[in-house]
Length: 451
Ligand SMILES: [Zn+2]
Ligand SMILES: [Zn+2]
Image (tube, rainbow, N blue to C red; front, side, top):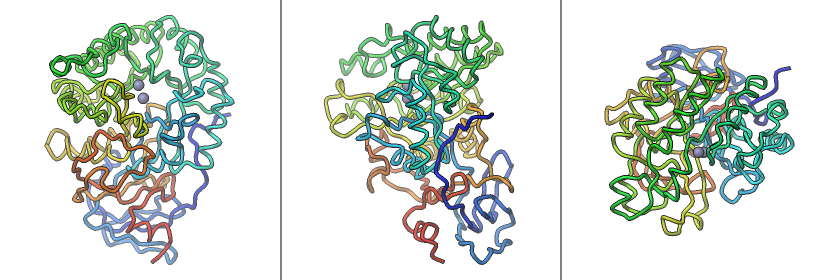
């Protein structure tokens, strides 16, 4: 029996006619104005703009001048439950995902308690079945308590619905432990995802080790702390013929290590975050703790290498590493603040504003990489094709907004793009056939059913 891996409540399936949107889906090669008719949550028909008629009980949205994309997929978020519900919950975190145009997210297990036991995982999947706004998948811990000393019962966790395994938040320093994990992975299936960092090199670092950390007198985390672990673990993946996913790549040396591994035919993949793709350690000069995350923001040459790797496919997908923290935790001196930035609500707009509008990347490439994470975890890729479940986001590329000016949907506000003016506002998100988010003016129509 195939275990269920994505969890959400049954929500009313949408009956909508999205009229005249510029539909851009790199996979179905759509790039132009179309009508999209959605019936009972499925894409019933695609037609030339203005060609389709709504059935009597369908709501029509005039989307002329707006863009419709396959909704995004985020393989790396922290929903903070159980244990840290004051930062985020499945309810608030998936509402933030929907507001950002996402139709699916994968939650990390570094909660309190850690998701290292099937009973804890089952309580989470049940919770997601009650309160998730978009489907949620879960990674379980590789080692008990993320302590790196003892493997979890990986088979039980897979049976309980785990998409894969990670000790994210902490590196798996023991190569022997990782070797055992990937040997088990062959039996259990699922992806092993790794937060790559050598604590002996990171030390007490609070930002990237370089000119800016030297100027500020702050302890740094060198790039090799990440890249040497990627090289080590890729060698293990090769030795065991295993599949491995590297989380939140931050530097040029890591890109080189991943590229070399892929060139050697090793089954590895990688992700990069909107913040690493658009910001550098230069912003840390402000000592604003919103810019403190792990791995840290690095140099411009690292940022450029990540963008280039995203373009070439060496980096497979975008992942936000959405990491909420409460205001009282972040509003302390930079050195003491916890690592992490939120990112679900700003991911598309940040990439569109900082990479597409500047000419560094094409829009269709960004859409592709914001949806490519699903397949890495053996999930269907969101795509706009008749017959498919509706996973669509409607975006106004012309709309600009100041991040945080209207607050956040997330329970936390530690967003590294706070105060920036970004372009590309998400108006509507359909996830698994249901309306998961509608911006206020639209919500009245699509959620309340007004005609
Ligand atoms: Zn991490
Ligand atoms: Zn993370």
